[in-house]
Image (cartoon, rainbow, N blue to C red; front, top):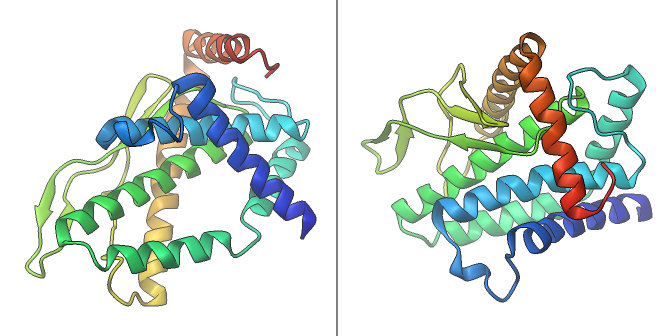
Length: 234
């Protein structure tokens, strides 16, 4: 329990550190940033926070797309341990309770954001595990449409940005209404769709990385520049 708690708090610490040290976003001015600016700031804080979190445990951060099996296994263990508690489940329960009181459009905006962030985190985790860590990434939706039931959906495939390269994924998002009593298969489908989108994006980036020497050089130089800025060896 102590190991899992320390793991969770350390990851949260680095997330907040990125907001403050890199982005200049603090608890005092956080509410001045909203919309896409806040979304992108969290994509970055989640991603770079993960790199710093893993480095704290002595994991080497690689960018070329190569990783030893023991290194990848160690990363998977640390990331799984980070979720080995009830904090996320309780947070999700409270968010659902809160969003049920919102208007449909406000609830939709929150649900979209949660889906995008989880896709981005899945991409970040896969990349660092496979030795292809990046400094920047983002997840974007297109083709919003209303449903007859007053909810919404997207009819165009998800777009992902990874280290400045843009990729069209193989699926549209699947975002059920969080205020409704979701069946286990509904939650499972949303999780599977997030994993499919992450696999699609990471597969395309890994292929580009394999074929493009300049992209590999850029990925390494971006990590070194980040390390120099933070004065933390990555």
